[in-house]
Each structure stands twice: as C-alpha cells, then as structure tokens.
Length: 458
Image (tube, rainbow, N blue to C red; front, side, top):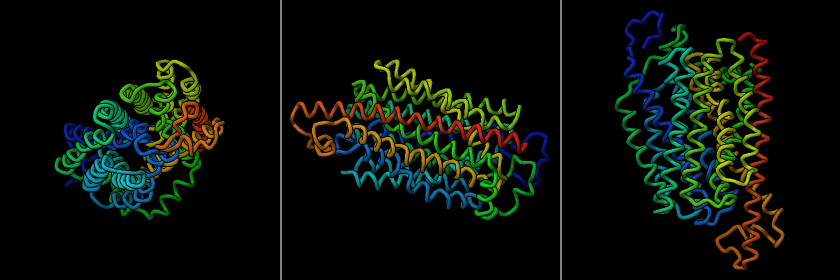
C-alpha cells in the first residue's frame, strides 16, 4: 500500500492491508522456524552432549559457530543479490534449505557430521533475514518500521516457545534425534507458502524519494564506507556485538545450567527454556520495538539510549539469576534481565535501516545480522563453553578433567564422578556469571552512539 500522503506512482501494483498482514504473518513464521532450528539444539544440548560424548566447548560450537560460519560468509553476497533480484524467491529457497538441513541433523552419528549439517543450516538462514527486512521496509513507511520489524522479530520468541516445549517433550520421550526431525520438517511447508502466495513489490514503494529507489544499487564499498563514516553507526555496531556475544553465548547454556545446577529433567528444562525465552523476548522486543516509534519523536538518539538503558539495568538481574539457589527464583530473575537486554534489538535494526536508502537496505540489514550471528550466535556459545571448561578444569582436583570427565568413558570411581559433576556444575555457573560483563560494556557504546546522534542532529 502506498504510504499516506504520497502520490501513487503510475503503473505500480498496490498492496492492501490484508495482503500486508499476510506478508507479516508469513515473515513472522519464517523467523519462527529459523529460531526453532536454533533453539532445539540449545534445549537438547545436554542430551546431545551425553549421547555423542562432547565437551562444553564442542557443544558451544554446535550451538553457534557451526551455524554462523557459512551464514556470515554467504549472507553478504545474498544480501547484495537481494538488492537486484526477487527477495520472495531468495527467502523461499533459503527456508527450504535450512529446514531440510535441520531435519538431517537428527540423523548425525558424531560431532563432525552434526557440525557439517549445522553449517548447512547456516547457509540456508543466510538468505532469510536481510532480504526479509528489505522486503518489509518497502511495504511500510519509516514511521511504522519499528512496529513492523517487531512483529517479524516476535517470530523469535514464538519459535523459542514452540521449539523448547516440543523439543523437551519429544526429546524426553523419543530421544533428541526424533525431536529435531519432527520439529524442523514443517518449515518446508512455510517455504512453499512464501513462494506461492507472495509477490515482489517495487523498490522504495513506501519512500518519498522514488528516484533513489529506481537507481542502481551503489557499490558495496560505498555503502560500507558511508555507514562506517558515522560514529553513531560504529558505536551501535560495537554495542550490538558485545550484547549479543553475552546474550546468545549464555542462552546456549541455559538448559545445561538448569540441569546441572538445579537438577531439572530434560522435559522440565524445555518448559523453563520456553517460559524464559518466550516471555523475555516477547516483552523485550514488543516494549522496545513499539515504544521506539513513539519516543524517537523526542529525538533520534533514543534509538541508542533505549538499548543502553535496557542492557545496563538488566545486568544485575541476570547476575543474580545465576547466583541464587532456587530454580524458580533464578528463572524470574533471568527473565527480568533478559526483557531489559532485548531492548537493544529492534531499535538498532531500525536505526540501521533509517541510515540508508532503499537500494542499501538489504546490505544494512546484513551488517546487523552478520554481527548478531557471527559474533553472538557463532562466537558467543563457543566462548562461554570454553570459559566453562576452563573453570571446571581449575576446580577439578582429581587429575585431568578432560580425560576423566569429558568423554563417554568417564571414570567409574564414585568419588571421581562426584568431583566431575561438582566441577562441571560450578564451571557453567561461573562462566555464565562472567558473561554478564559483556552487556555492561555494550552500554557504554550505546551511550556514545546516542551522544553522536545528538551532535550530528540526525
């Protein structure tokens, strides 16, 4: 639909409210299945670790880095392709690819097979996020993009709830392999619906500068140079990297944390993970996403101030959640901290879109998702797993921790088993407590970005 108050360009197709609602619903579904394919590995992490005899570092790699390697390298050429070619085709093919790769993960027999299949998931997801953001930005005007991007991003908590609950239930009843296959397969249906029911819009349909929308996409170097020249962009990018490093890194170990520290079962952990991720992401994304459209009228600096305040205020709640002895209290505190930490997400994504023109949007969205995926999803879990192993090794006084505790052939001596369990439990707790330093650091850069926005008057 043409933005209100703008002349209707001759010969341009128009998209009514019903069509745009369906577009949003399908985009949200795509986002949900993309997140389902991530969260099931995190939920089933302890079962996968026990079955395949993995270390926390290997589990962290499977949770993030394996997925992020090809996502980050393939995301840029796909984003550039989306500036010129049909985003509908790109997204539908990509959803089919990552859904099929996730189904195949349920058949992996060892670490390396699972690693390579997770790489395939990353290739598929590389073609989803940036084209989807560009597609939505062409259908909705600037003043509505915060709300629209929020609806799309709410697919994440929807996927988290569905993925965690079903993975916990199916995994505890039929095993982790059956859980992965059953949950991922319906994504193929979503890919088909996206391809058959949507059509490509004109570029810049909801922008006043139609001439810019008709122009050729500028060279990649020019886009990146333009964005990097702005201090507000640089600081928001650093803040985004730090907060996602802490959030995704710690999120990959929520299930092992509750199973080791609070002795919950796999099915109980599925419920805890669903409640935590569903409530936290839904409230955090909704409050910040819908709210930023309102408070940004007081000044564009609120695109950076809101994330800064959220991550800074939320950090003490998160730290307390890892420290308390009661699992329900830990859950409440972790939810509180995560709600506030999620304030960074939509405002940063919308700020990046508003910094560029219609022919640069997929590239700007790629920069956002490149950082959140490569740094947050990719490096975060591996970093936290590595730190956890370091703490566990330092706390284990009965010999070589990796040899005695880190494989299927764990020592049969009861005292050694008890020491392994104690070291593993304390290791994951201390690693997660350490991760809270990262969002605190990110707040500094978001505040610096807000100052730069005020000074530039943008």
